[in-house]
Image 1 (spheres, rainbow, N blue to C red):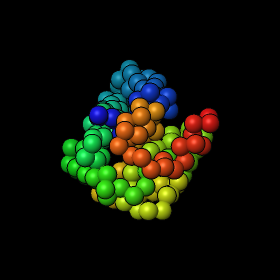
Image 2 (image 1 turned 120 degrees about the horizontal axis):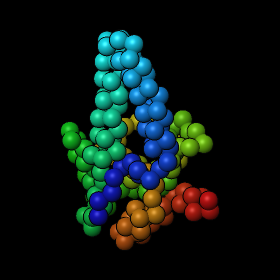
Image 3 (image 1 turned 180 degrees about the vertical axis):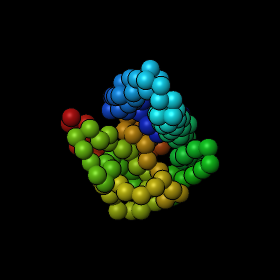
Length: 155
């Protein structure tokens, strides 16, 4: 089953996107009204760059959970871990956690669970935003403990 790495239902991403639009569009229109085409062009370029980045990170990255293991897909990268290679499945958070930081589910070849995640996705650690659907799918193939799951289910 396929899942997006970033959960678009997470309100923090939508709020960030809306705030950027609300702040940027009036500045662009004001610059056009005053005749500052150069500033409007720069602001419009930054807005387009952000939109492309948002679409790239939220729509293109995905993980696939199969009977054979976990696969991570991105335009330029592809990582695969078989269930035999995976030593730990758990719930963690980014290194610099804020109150709105989403929980992450991770699959690691390291035997020691690590609740604080830092570093990039690689062939040793694949992660995605926590969702119950992912846990349901993983539970079909992973019979061992999912570290930190009891903490997140209490919320």
